[in-house]
Length: 513
Ligand SMILES: Nc1ncnc2c1ncn2[C@@H]1O[C@H](COP(=O)(O)OP(=O)(O)O)[C@@H](O)[C@H]1O
Ligand SMILES: [Mg+2]
Figure 1 (cartoon, rainbow, N blue to C red):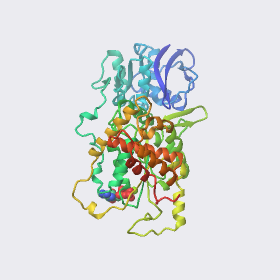
Figure 2 (cartoon, protein in one colour):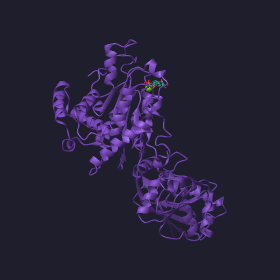
Figure 3 (cartoon, rainbow, N blue to C red):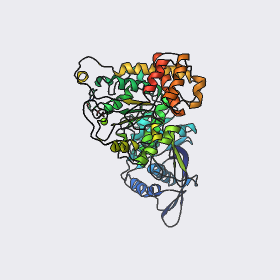
Figure 4 (cartoon, rainbow, N blue to C red):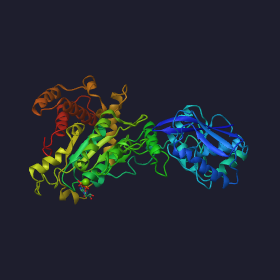
């Protein structure tokens, strides 16, 4: 009997698997037991061809392949490699893999090429935690695997090169890696390189101000304004002013992209905050994550980054409703018949919309051609509960010619990013004992003990509560946004001007109540 260690992944959960291969005399047949799904059952056909095409025998015996523990479901083509090695070992064609702490996985082509698989980073991280010290994986996945510290990760392009390594200990050039360092963005020349720059957006100071506050406190933001005013342009530049991803955040994001098979081919680790901008025709399933074993949807692919919904009212109402839970809980749970899956989805929510179907309601130059009913119907497409989760609403006026034409430099991402980072540092210090680190993520009940209000600020807020008919939720939002504005200024107290500005971001005449 031959035993090879490997692992499986379901959702983000990784568990070790033993591939046991046993042979007996009798009619030649292959049986795979231990709850294999179709991809695993088909493995024997790929392995048969791969062995034959590389000059090895597929043993003509009664073969039992047991995937233990037998009670968990096994999914994925990555068990091809351990099955092939198990067969070769059990029939005495290759020496032992060596070491209980070695694991392997990889998909085989019929000619013996080893193909890359999904979920390599989460699998290796978990297996290292369980004490495994060496992994034989597809060469294609090395870029991801080499970020796992404390584990010798070896990559192979083909069964032949892997067997060569097992026989003679030769590792093909450049196919090894361990503990590659996390790229440090501080060491690069400018923290905002590789991003679109706010410098390109001329004028629109109010819009930029709103965005800077949103980025400072991780506040959800909505832009309302006529077509061509720069809303989409501004949203695409939001990632340039957010603080860089920490190592821990980067690992969390990479895991999600790894299991979705969406890791960019040249990168092993995602080091930039994700910016996801699903089209308004997106289905609820593509936003939340779909499938029998659900893959992360757009809202999880935006984890630690930005989810931007352009033309918000064009989205399916059901799809928008579904955002409510993750906006509240910062994660999404998807239930399936056999179990449920939870993916993190802590994103900054940004959205843009025209004020009405024609786009010119409230515009001082071009007149709006919509009826009052058209406008109301348009606004009703976005539900109250969704609007309730938006902290900052910015009215974007049409662009002015003098700005577009101006050669004078406009506020750039570098300047904004520095201020955002300063405000974030203050928040990190304030929330150092908590699991969150930005004003926008603060649970409402913690506001009173944590926020210092100046006396005039207190009086103003009391008056505003009645005058603006704030709800409890609205009150909390005004306070959190004021806190971010005060942090941008480095003010320990929330003062009246901070509250006045925050109140502005709750009032808009462009949305019917
Ligand atoms: N303030 C601005 N500065 C520079 N270019 C702008 C500005 N506003 C709009 N534009 C130009 O107009 C185009 C349309 O802007 P866009 O962001 O798509 O508008 P919206 O999303 O509000 O309809 C942009 O690609 C850009 O070329
Ligand atoms: Mg647009």
